[in-house]
Length: 32
Image (cartoon, rainbow, N blue to C red; front, top):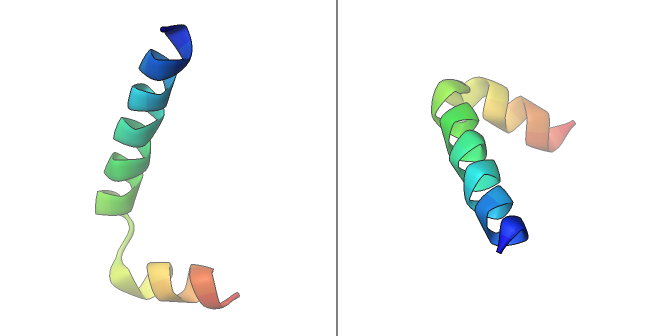
């Protein structure tokens, strides 16, 4: 149960970071 909650929180944070990062940085990060 705890791991499931932690996973939900992690996905939430990851989504927020994803929404904050500009597309250019996204491309640079994945190509590096």
